[in-house]
Length: 164
Image: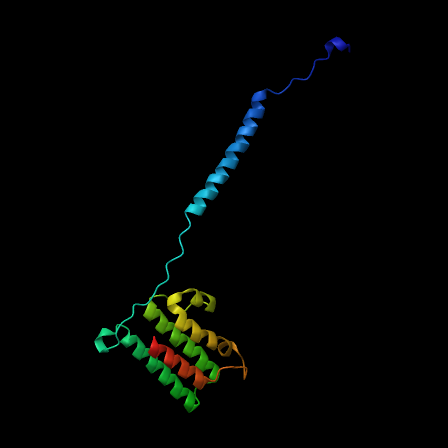
């Protein structure tokens, strides 16, 4: 084979380079637009629900029925505890449920499934968060590890529901 028969390699057209750089630029632009659209599309954090102050004079108190139901449930639970049919841990667990239910009726926020951290994030649920925080350890404790006596917890829940 002679050197006259050897042919130089063919080069790529410059358009392939332009096409490659263009495709990379389109992908990068697409990601930038996608991230910007996602940031703009985020829902704003809901405004805190604040309870409306109301005169507590009989029929003018819109939460009187809910308050009466909660106080009745607390008294019934206290009676069961004093009679010996409810264990201290059960008292703490049921008190947390009663306070959460009342908070839900009072504010319109379903507090039954919220964690303590989530309760604390809602300004309107601050009274419930305070009581639930003190019930948390005894509610999940086993045996005599409860730090708050059931009588004290009952009294605190009673005061919170009455004052709220």
